[in-house]
Length: 322
Ligand code: F6P
Image 1 (cartoon, rainbow, N blue to C red):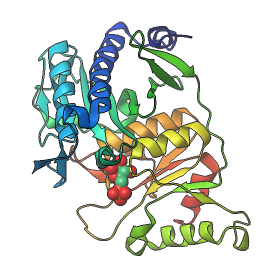
Image 2 (cartoon, rainbow, N blue to C red):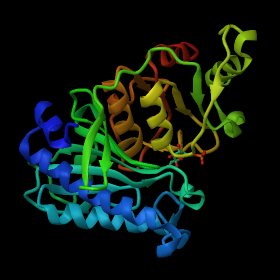
Image 3 (cartoon, rainbow, N blue to C red):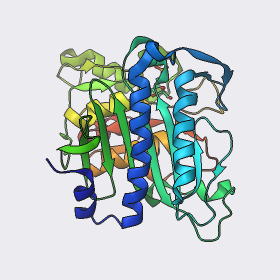
């Protein structure tokens, strides 16, 4: 089976980017090991602190963030990082050529039930003019990303990644520690009969999403004239992995509970990297008002409504917004 390095070279990734990706994945392998130790290592459960988003941090959130932060800071390739678990950007090497945004452990409440979790990341060039602690350099639309992906810590540890030349899925071979290409050039089916949304928030959605989901639920008895199935992993990384594997539509839509949180998912290290992966696999990723990857960020922890998945189903969903 092809190794990660060969695929990255074939896709034309520059050497320094390949080295950075390998460094980042070394940190993810360590996280994978820590996660798998679970209760035996006392890493499950919550800390007493909250992150900048006001969410209680799990011990594994803190551990994963520290592993990534230490590894990337020492690498020399990275000028600064932004993380879900860090209020401000973290300066790294003044001469680093890249910026990395990440969610160190997406879906971390799933650690309590030994279910899917993962690390999501996005890489852009560091502008020459920037100081290492300048957050404004991170305020670039997703179209500027040079690589994005996630590592899923499930029954096997898997990597989905794109450098803009298709989306590929790799599986970690723990016997030698390498990621091997197991699903090259993902192509999402354009149609689907599977949707993914936290239906308990229904009363907070805008009218178009209310009508769209109501029609999905009406199934064969409604205007869609076919039955749909619903899945919700409660970790975006798990839900998007399913979409990449067999198609589907994943939504965390606009929510009218709090005007400061127009959606739940964060643009820089959740919505954008997943949008890049899904678009490279032939799918679409939209906020309901435009392409996610074209949203100009105004702050590093910005949230956006998210509608991602199989092309024709996303188009159908968006038709309710017109
Ligand atoms: O960090 C965000 C996240 O955990 C996503 O991974 C997931 O899709 C979502 O929140 C789950 O939200 P809820 O708590 O509404 O199920």
